[in-house]
Image 1 (cartoon, one colour):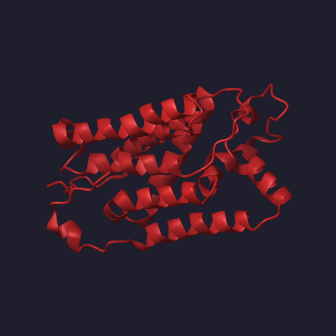
Image 2 (cartoon, rainbow, N blue to C red; image 1 turned 30 degrees about the vertical axis):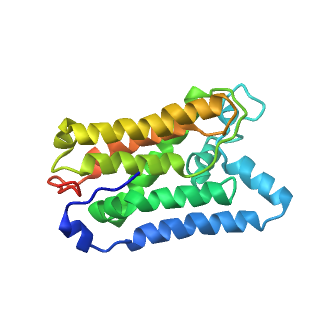
Amino acid sequence: MEQPVSDTGYQERRRFPPVLLALMAAIVGAFLLVSFASVDQQNAIFYALALIPARFDATSAYHFAAWYDALGPLFGHVFLHAGLLHIGMNMLVLLQVGPWVADRLGPSRFLTLFFLSALGGALAYILINAHSEMPAVGASGAICGVFGAYFLSVRRSWREALADPAVRNAIGTFLFINVFLAGIASATGFLPIAWEAHLGGFVAGGAAYLALGPRVPRGPWG
C-alpha cells in the first residue's frame, strides 16, 4: 500500500523512531533464536506461544494447566514466524506506517497500541476458530492494528478521517485485501493466512488509537 504524504512536517520528522526499530529488532531477534534452536526446542516453543484455539477450550485435552499460561500465546505469537518470507513481509509492511504512528503516539503508547492490537487479533482468531487445533503465528494482526490507527490519524480528528471518502476507500481496500482475499486464500488452501487476526487486530488498533491518540492530531494526508 502506498503512503501518500502531503504534510511536510511529517517528512521532516525522524523517519524511524527508536521504539519502532527496537520492536522490529526484538521480533527479528526472536525469529533468529528460534531458527537456530533444535527441532525439539522449536516444537516446544511453538506449542507454548502459538495461538492454538483448542488450548483455550476448557474441555480440550490440550487446555492450559493454569490460566496464566494463556498469556504466553496471546502476546508471544507476535514473535513467532513461519519462515523468512513471512517475517520479511511483516517487517516491510510495518515500515510503511509504523514510523508515523510511533512518532504520533510516542514510545509507550505505541507499544501499548501494538500489543493491544495483537491481543485483539488473537482473541478474534480464537473465538472464530473455537476448538480448532490449527496454530497461528506472526505479527500481522498487531501490524493491522497499526494500520487501523494510521487511517484514523490522517486527518485532524478520527471523525474527519472517517468522513473523508479517500480515507474510507483506503480502509475498504485494506480490509478487502487483508481480510476478504486472505480469507479466500485460507479457505481454498492456497495460503494459510489468519484473516481473523487481521480483522481483530485492525479493529483493536483503531479502538486503541481512539483512547491513546493525541486530541488534535495533524495527519500526513493534509
